[in-house]
Length: 240
Image 1 (tube, one colour):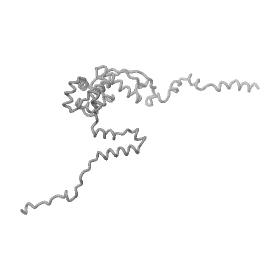
Image 2 (cartoon, one colour; image 1 turned 45 degrees about the vertical axis):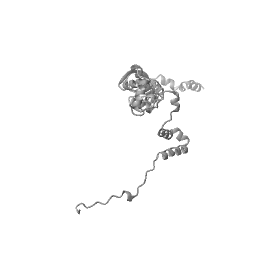
Image 3 (cartoon, helix red, strand yellow; image 1 turned 60 degrees about the vertical axis):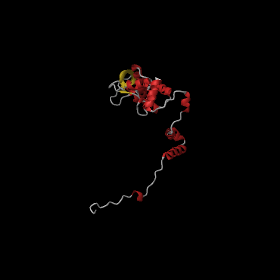
Image 4 (cartoon, helix red, strand yellow; image 1 turned 30 degrees about the vertical axis):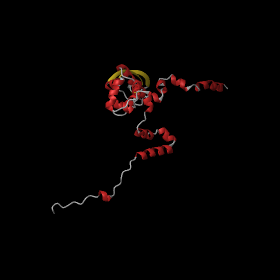
């Protein structure tokens, strides 16, 4: 009986929590670090920190703060895709504020005040098609020269003179904007530009709509017979 009592006395010691023992060991810190936070190259641990950097776009520089994960050993920095996109927009906003550039909302309001499309706005600025749309959607940033051109178009009289040379019609009143109808080729282009979302929902309707637009855009070319395009016989100049 004394032996049995002794066994029951030692049982609680054998059932001690292993995590508590691990916490008291020297290897407890490294063993408890999640795999996702460990650098596979050097074995260091990634921790969140804030850094200050000088970023440049279109030849302009601004100082920005970034939140990154930095390795405790090799100081390697990493960011998630969402952080990369957010840092890009933050850098763009910082450069605009530092150098006094127009914001993407101000660019859009300037264009809408003239009653022109993004392609027409590009023509007024003397730029390739699609550039101003990238500014409005924050895909890229305008430089100082482009910013000065946009500001100049805020003067309606100046914009009228530019529109004459660029062959662009300004629609400055609500009546002119309401009466505006895009050219036929733009309407066909818009009908053919079907989103991927609609393609997944109604593939049959989308395919028929796209094919009808293509069929309307095809111009029938006259077919010539082989006799019409046969080469003329070559005369013997030496015989003459």
